[in-house]
Image (cartoon, rainbow, N blue to C red; front, side):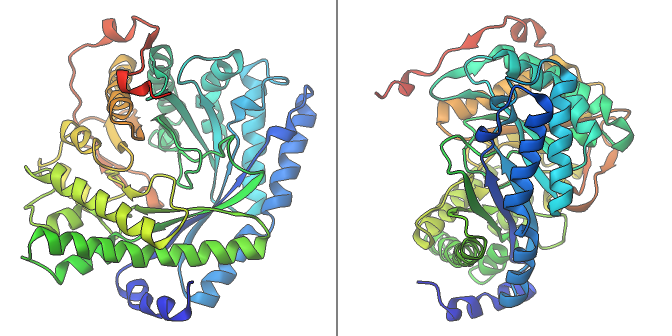
Length: 454
């Protein structure tokens, strides 16, 4: 049972350590909106989203005022559009009309992002899947709030290398289509392996088909809280270190549980999960990198970084599952570059490279996230990076993702501003040796032997 004493315990975390509820995300199923008439499809989608989400933003604001807990974002996720667009969409323009409908619904309900312009193609692509994927560059260039994701692999099915190759091309085209905004469209596009059905965090959120008609998910974040707690045990052994992270994660998750329950009750929509993810921001003191450095690293990226991150991720999950019966989504530590000032500083000083970040993704909660790369990076190289990351996820039975931003007109060492929570990033060097012959083989990498568990 959650009580006011637990809320009072978090006041200092909120006021001094930048604890916040990063997002309340309303997941909405669009499966009952299917229609062979494109206009009717769009009308049904708009009507359902605006009906269910009409009070989402206001409810979030009321909870903020009542409990004194900052709720940074109010968002919507919907059923992957490729699953509902088939009967009505026969061209790229048809698909883009749905993206525009999502964007209008998001604007009219006041949310900052809507996720689910997505396709699940881990084993193969339908006609509609491929059409939607090819429409992504145009869709993201013509909308403001729409986020897109594509799941190209899983432990159970292997990796769809045709989709991997295509996504390298799509990321390049999205960069070109939004080059006037520093290729910002790519910041709203994620390529997944083992994507979860209940992720409340953008840009990868979508409403999985295993979910109810509508559901409330909450994403909590508190890197500053964890860092502050570790400052009190500086120099102590790993047992004390782990226990401190775990207890802190427990307290943070209880805040999310409270907000989720209250929002669910007031909106009359079932509660889904609390996602406890240490999601950083560009603000000073709100950094996952600084947590790792507080553990004893001179800089994130130094030898020992992957071990420190593994420890952090595991203890965060252990604390979270004790605090809520329904912990899900990604839950762990995010390591985006542009959104974490400590990561940015480590890249600038030469301590952190893409190769080291890839090693860290073996134990973090997501993957290669918000990394700016040279604008002339070939599509095949991007596909190769996606394939590497997907292989880590497939073999290790974990979610991995890639959100790369090839910034058109920028090169290694340039700094790119994205604004807001997306922050800024130095353009990082990528390996320039060619992998196109490997990527162009096509077909599918089979699932690993340990996937056969039936």
